[in-house]
Length: 356
Image (tube, rainbow, N blue to C red; front, side):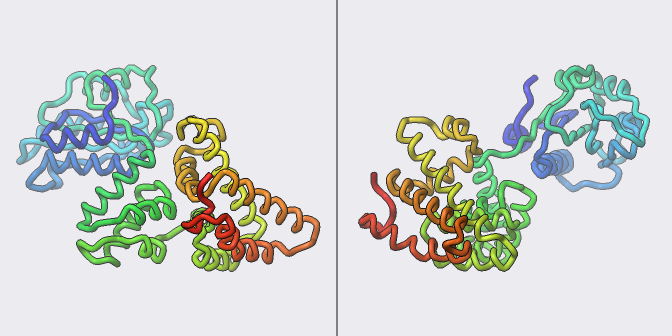
């Protein structure tokens, strides 16, 4: 049986489908936790109690005791749930502190108790499919894989999470949140909670709120700074530049990052003009598909000729810095301050390096 996706299993649970055994594995722990919670809600619509729900960690309790618990008839309830965290029996890894009997688990998988839902989670990208235990699970359990979400899936998740918290968010704010925070769902959920609290219930999260409140790493701050530069939003870019410099970032590094992004924009624009898809371009230039998509959106403001001119300007700045003709901080400031003028010199009515 092929592994289900997060969306598949959540759809089943909403329709009232509850399996006897779940094997949840992958790297996206937050989604895994959401499914565990949804299983509990489906199994116990009136609420969970200590007699009907048991949580066991594989590194602390032998798996045969979890099996015994699953086989025990529930007390004062129609059903029970046994949840085993990080069950490494399905991988090549071994628990260093506990003596497990995986044969007991395999026997249970082949004949599960009808009154129990057994949840087995594995924090691993892959299962060891050579093991009889894994084959038994694939045959008799509902196996669900949790991979890191793609960029469009992450956007959908943000919209759903904001809605779950009784808020709304604009597309620009969503894009900025992804750019600022990245695709770590646990961190995104925390940031969304903060933004909802700031905006107020049923209010709309705007891009400016994300800029003001979102927690960013230094690397993400640099990424947002580069985005402001290539979008020719110089006032914001200058403020971010001074903040980065205060935090000991080197001006030459910021210039290098600007040059790198302009070069990627140029490559994406040239290859797009030749009819290549974003996936193909990402593979050709060795850049993540999401970063390629961002570069394409940024590059829409510039012509190929304009991007080539910017690359030439940046190369000249680099030469002047290395030959001692100008200080790197001064060069960075002058480049940012002159960028709007360079854009207007293109003569495009929108004030951008646009057109071909």
